[in-house]
Image 1: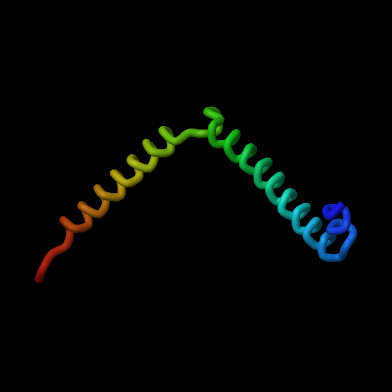
Image 2 (image 1 turned 90 degrees about the vertical axis):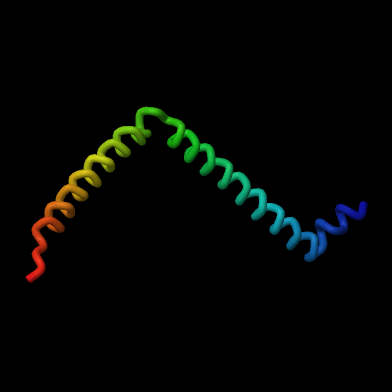
Length: 76
């Protein structure tokens, strides 16, 4: 009977509303986590190897360019 009195009182209503809000946050975060993990683990959309190779190539080219510019510097 104490539970019914708490739920029907204003204080019980506030605690019930807080419980519902907390439960909704948990459900929303669970759904968001599921979609995030399903996207990350999808091998079709995950091209880390290709992106790493492309980045290494760009860095190599920029390093060669910088090295050539350094060679062209002359001290008068």
